[in-house]
Length: 142
Image (cartoon, rainbow, N blue to C red):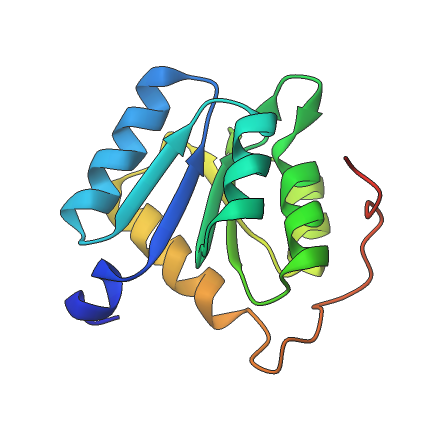
């Protein structure tokens, strides 16, 4: 993605861990993205409902709901949004399940290069015609 295009791409980063959230925010800002970082599912939900967002990066652990719930809810409303789910360590079962939903999974800890590669992969995996990548098991999340 060209730098000009990155600068117009708003990314929402959701992570309850302030250290992890800040690290991802800094990586993305250095790469030229406009970043809005929040710590909770409700805050992310409000942002995603109110702003034009091209990319959602969320941790799987977000309290009462999890990052996958947030992604599935967002995809149901906006199937064109690219998504990356970060996890604490590799989880082959979760990775397989999220890939079926068109979600890119990235295990923590990760490098800047790995994050940027995951973003690139997530953007390539999104439908271009606005069609959903597949059936969502969770569409009634508030």
